[in-house]
Image 1: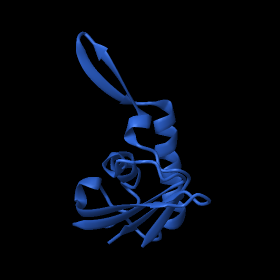
Image 2 (image 1 turned 45 degrees about the vertical axis):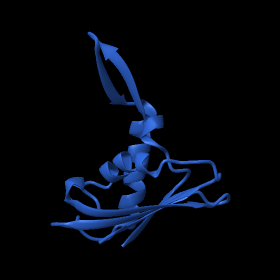
Image 3 (image 1 turned 90 degrees about the horizontal axis):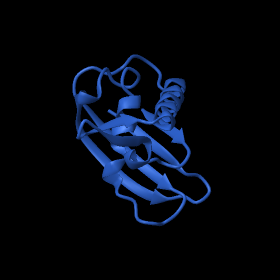
Length: 116
């Protein structure tokens, strides 16, 4: 089944913040990141019909960016896959194969996800 999340894809570099505490680096999700994860979850729930998949799953992701500037596609999965946990699959550790592709769509930036 295909899920389409609206808006410009966001890199984990934009939603996680880092600081040093007692000399050790620590990361946490920003308020903006938590809001985006919740938004992705609501969008997915409105489109996913049925119960979360069990067992091994395969995921295909199309990232549609407004601009043609360089994007490292390996920085876009964590938040996305976490936000689908409990909706499309029981846990993102079930993902055994993923294909991530990037595209340009000036007028309709989005993320298209197919889960099998």
